[in-house]
Amino acid sequence: MPKPIRRVVTGHDAAGRSVFVMDGAAPHVYRRSPGSAEVTELWETRSAPADNGGDAEVTDHAFRLMPPKSGTVFRIIEYPPDKQRLAALEQQRATADDGSGHTDAFDRGAPRHPGFHKTSSVDYAIVLSGEIYALMDEGEVLLKAGDVLIQRGTNHAWSNRTDQPATLAFVLVDAQPL
Image (cartoon, rainbow, N blue to C red; front, side, top):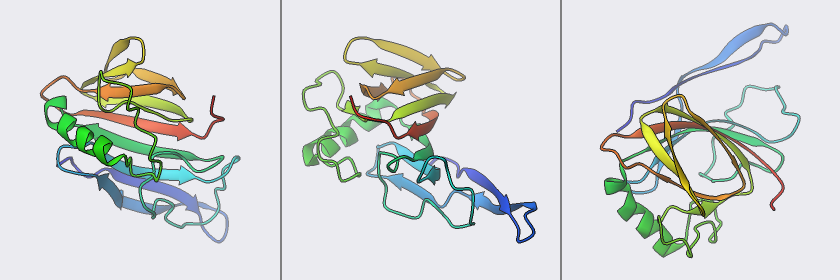
């Protein structure tokens, strides 16, 4: 079980001064099944430009893969080694449910890895620890701690071929589908 992620959120008091409005473990952590990736939702915006008003918890909803329309999602995902994760992915594909309500997110025509899926967002991925392969329809690249990938609405998968978890931070930005 990964260590809880501390989330500190700033805001404004009634006089307009900057204050800390939240400080503690991120309250919304999702794991679909044993062996699957663990997703910690940190923040989301629901419009562009974003609304910095209020102090409400914005991640208090069912897990969804995609950011809100015209919004963003900030999350951290810990990917277990493929030797643990592949069986969980095959089960998710068999039920055709990615947790977002989209039954077509998994690419059934991608035999290389059961985690292939396509989103219409622009995703900024930063490897925090470990290493992981980013797979495209054509090719793959090994990413290590400190590396950044800009994923632009492409069919893709993540493959952790080591014996240690890989932890990535993601910012997903709503985008027009191709």
